Length: 416
Ligand code: AMP
Image (cartoon, rainbow, N blue to C red; front, side):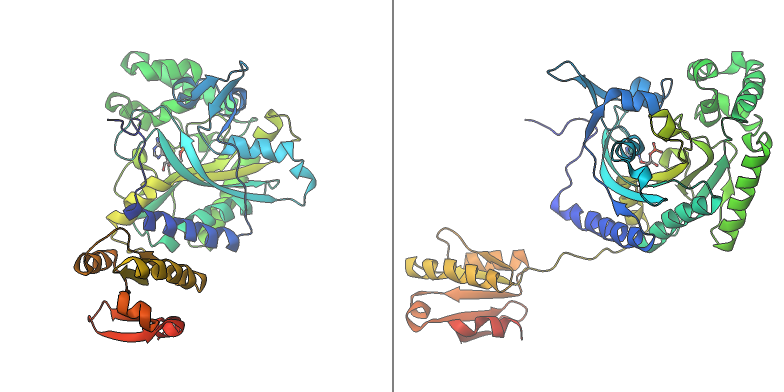
């Protein structure tokens, strides 16, 4: 028996109302902020991700679904959403449009990760990217969008973590201080952190190993090493978040896993859990467009994990709209009635009425049972007599009351 590949899941019909609900809120909230939807290919040239996300990150080194196509080109299933949108921004000359350009996406993301609760090999993200503005008011707006999205969904038990990891001016000096500090503790570090010290020192701060916690807790803070421009950017962002009444926690250990971030980084986490269960995060990436061959363009954005959002919708007992009930089930008895039923189903659908028609040869009792289990509001019953008389029996499934209705008047009876 085949199974869905490890770390992937089918989204079965009973789960769909959650997904439709999240999609509806995404469409509403992005519209409020003037974001336009973009859909990019599921795979890209591998170089796009190694260049943007960066070698030395877990995502690139361990988690990419990379493969050579039949022409020998290395392609990778999208392991995050930002790089593709940046590629599209450059490829389609969007720097010539009035800035900022605001784009959003909803798409599957592929990561060869160890599957566990809330961590899959294919998951979906809703992301927003905003290009061409370095004013911290845009950082506040992007965070406000994410925050409003969660609030509109009805999620309450969330906290916003915020940090600033500097820019290309001030980051090198901070990394030096960080490395100096950590090199005094090399013997106590986990194997991953020993590697990070060489390859990606910022990631030392978000190590989850118990033995590294004490060291990371006491590490120097990036916000104490910001250049005046970054410090002022951060101060203004905090002021704006205050004006918007968005509560935040400054988290000195928040660095995000990818190389391209500059200045603002943020994450939204369920209140009582750690960053392992983050619902989403993002930040600025002011150097990325240039790094990918575009003009220097400040930019920022976020990605939110839809599966984890749905887990939290369920945890917080938020009720989501049920799909519309089936309006009509058509039951028939005999060959002539079947022909009539087929035509009737088609006519009703043409009038916008949802119909499931019986099939095969079943007793009336079995057909009514089927109508019940489908949750139909009405059942139309057609037998030989009805065919002759040009009528149907209309049964209200709520109270089992029945009446005879002539064919041409069925729709008006259903709309009563
Ligand atoms: P990231 O950019 O890696 O922080 O991912 C953004 C969000 O996507 C995370 O906060 C999670 O909600 C979600 N996410 C990331 N990786 C996974 C995964 N392997 N399985 C499920 N959701 C994920």
